[in-house]
Length: 230
Image (cartoon, rainbow, N blue to C red; front, side):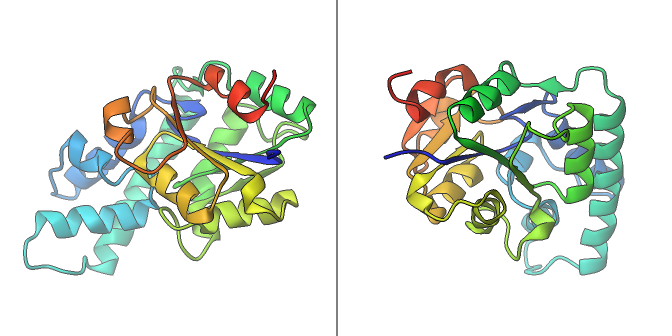
């Protein structure tokens, strides 16, 4: 088996933001009069944010099966504003340790590198610009959740990343992420490797109950799995 493409998640996997996604989502909901805990938000981490907001609203309101679309839109707009401001200005926004080096080593070995995300394109582009990953040669493709029909845990993001990177065989793709939704996405897509990283939003204990081929403590442990004999 030769891996031709590795699809990485962004926040918590390749981007360090000290749990800002969770905090910004809680803050937006609180401003809208809805109190949620960190654990409740973590349960919907990794999926498209409008879907996550709708799920949190219905959980907080027994008997309400569908969250009002205008409320979801309003809360999501507030979340976008908070998240974009954070990624543009917060001094602590960095890549996860070794991310760029891993990208470079994979590409030097002929493996394509893509990012997919539960963020919309508006947020993703701010992150890519901040980390200087939008320049030519760093990545082969990026895909945001508002660019596909269905976000995680469905496989659409990976299929779109394959299309953009020019890779046709799902059995030659590896998926790397830090949430259950990432692992479910990779499994649904039929990826040869579905790798959970346990130094992001979810711990080893939280990830090990979800489908995967490997769990690693950091990006530094990836290369021997993807490039055997390295």
